[in-house]
Image 1: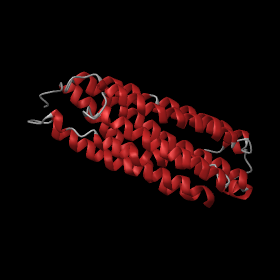
Image 2: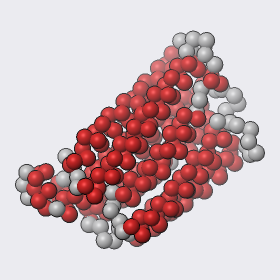
Image 3: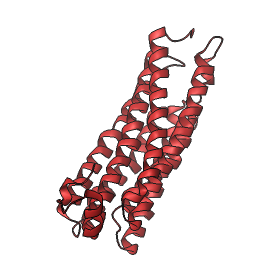
Image 4: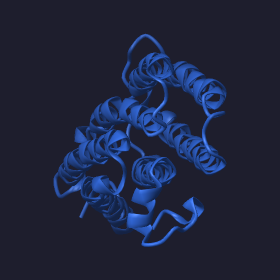
Length: 264
């Protein structure tokens, strides 16, 4: 077993990474298979969601390999590549925001305006966080990189809660409620990342406790922010499909049931 982690620490991290991989993989499969259960105009959101979890599944496979190489017999903690997580986030976080906007089927001008703000901000958030998390000696100490990364994060929250909120006025109460829950989930899960970041930020070299806390936090947040988020996107797509086409709703539900009783 690892020379740097206790058996319990090694097993905890390894099992959680395995859980993350399985969650991402099977969420992708579900989204692909379920795409015909919404109207065509909402299928893009489900396809993007499947891309998000598919990309994450690939990177979790690579993270598990890096973890076993770094902490298996004769391994070196310095060989653990936290960059896999940041490459994953660099691809998946903008796509998460794209699926959020896509599922609402907003007017083209509104959709473009939101994405032109959200996507660059998400890119900056990830890029600015990496040097601090990887403890690279680039220009600033880790806390400064963490603070810089927080600026675009706060801007994303502003766009989602204020600017996106204005575009929800024409949505039904059921959809507005789902989107409100979606944004709360985003805050709850994205809020875990800086906390996990802080666990390892002040560690000198490799310290087992902060490392384990960071990996556990990142993995739990990833599963919620990608898998659970994607399932909520599917839920919204179902509601909007039923609202747009009562015949489709009757076909899916088997009766003229209320839209609120949808997501099954």
